[in-house]
Length: 237
Image 1 (spheres, rainbow, N blue to C red):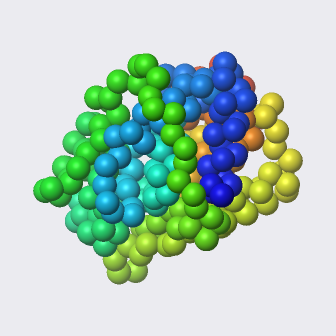
Image 2 (image 1 turned 180 degrees about the vertical axis):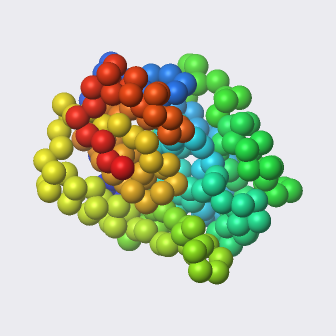
């Protein structure tokens, strides 16, 4: 079996090929564009390590990258770009990653990555053409899906191990409790390296096929503009 969460996201994207599912600061993403981009990114992940880091602004690039990593049976390590350079370097070393999916501006923002890190820069990739259609690697709900590092309020940041089953259960609970539907429009203001931004404003809309509108940096006038234009029905903050 392939990880349930990944299967349901890929199915949702493929069932809504021409629906705009994500709007971010950079572009709009239709379902088929998300699926194709995920396969493109997967093609560029060439590491023997089990964990792959993501250093990206809040955007459609995050679910594209997370699904690409999962399709290879690997674990997502989201990097908190608001931490100090020392803390980020510590997380990279502690998690044992050697590959980071990122964009040039984010590398500059954190003051550079440690020597020897392989980078997959999404702003330098071409998403044109059909990438190899990939069969996802077999994995189950016990698979380590994400290693989320705490902000290190006491001592160094600690990697919290979240299985695919943990994330699936959380998404399912939220769906049932709040009764979200694909007619909803989510406004995503929370960083996706944060457990709440990762699950509530990224995985839930990705699974149910609701539109998600992302804003990389909180700016009151920009958010008011998005509220007027996109008319979100869900704002989790």
